[in-house]
Image (cartoon, one colour):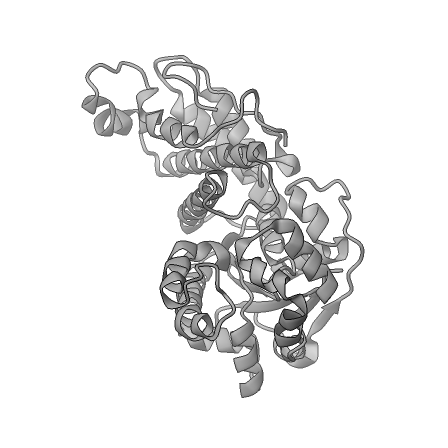
Length: 397
């Protein structure tokens, strides 16, 4: 990763579909290969190379890179970097990854953010050398190399315990009568290494069905991935982002510290996400903030939003309206905004297995009394309500 000032930066990633996360795997490789010991940096040349990778990726997956997309991708990557930083430093969910894998993911996210920032500068015609000199180097009279502007990234990458040696390798909504149901199958790796977790959580038919969902959007709009905790929503969101370039908003990563702080005050349990206090006091505001951000961004670019949305599903079913219409009304979004709602269906035993494997603190109470959780949540009619109100049902098993 980023070494001492003036030293070569080495990041080991694989490109394309085997990259750190998506097209940014190639981005990370280009960024790493171009930052060297030289005192000057060919920012324009690097920008052209990054743009070639990004342009080819957009063409391959059929979306248009607008100025808004470029900016929102930076926002998305910043969020993913924070999420990986928290995981790598023991403050977030590890999702079954080893410390070395977590730090490797953090390295990749740093490179992703840097790459997309350079890409935006390239499209704007920004003279990066000039603005870095003005904003950074003039504040450090002893520095004569371009390495100084990268000190902040170096400091961020060095936080926490890092492993020795090289990093690991690595449309309009359809009506109820048009609701589509996709049959699943056994989870398979089938050569897809964009996200190793995806290979074990998502079935191959589920992946195919997810890609079909994005095909219903025309360069903008919102896909709402909902389902029980442990049904594979986050993996599905990352898979869609990797294959389409869509922006991802994950409920789990939206405001986890705020949720924990409030619940610690309300119930004494920062990981409580199942009590009436959480459902009535905290969850409505978290979801409203999430869908407000998602619908605003979706007016210009494709967005994937994932979360349980169980209370939304029940409310929509009770009102006998489609979940997509309920979401738009709740957010005050225009009727013309394309919103597609997807329910990821997984059996209780599979959900139990996934929860046990991911070791999330918020799952502890569920696993401790699984029969009670299964009766109160999984078998309480929510699945049937979802089947009645969502646009697409994907069986992920």
